[in-house]
Image (cartoon, rainbow, N blue to C red; front, side, top):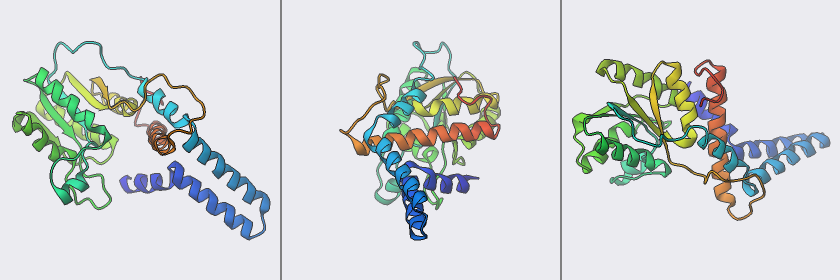
Length: 262
């Protein structure tokens, strides 16, 4: 299922889909179906415009980010801080050493803040190697060095280093929480990823306090043209489409109770 989802997304992300539509238009044009050629080329041009030159993707991402808010106050008790992986550039780290983050670095920055606020809480990092090759360390392994740098004892960290998908994050985390007898957990992940994550954890009967981080939008965007940042628009659209696709797939497969958890 992991490889199927990876291949599917390689083909279904917006720019790949635009390329496939253009290929179809050339094929139909080559065999004399000019109407179909016009249809697919027009569809590709429309999708390209929406992806590059509108705020469509940012607004779709904003809807996800606004779905679940962070609590206004710190919880009274917290025995475990769950951090979903996806923040380290493990391929770069393997080649160059050091500690390299991507845009999701807030997951570990906020996790560190909570770890310092709750010195008795365990830190469960869920994240294996999600690459095709499977030859790199996952976030669970890499996080040991990160937290040690800031004086967090390694024995506070519970490593879940087998998961490659969000479903595996939740499923494997449930087993570890039960084996360690932990409850009263905060769940840290990117804000746009929180609805799907919360839906999975609730379906598996894991009560968590959502702690969204890594916001990519201001929360005040409106739909309209945007010619100022086409590359960023493409990135936001891709992220939003991937997350919405994941929400739909998990709901259809019965892994969440509702389509859009809140």
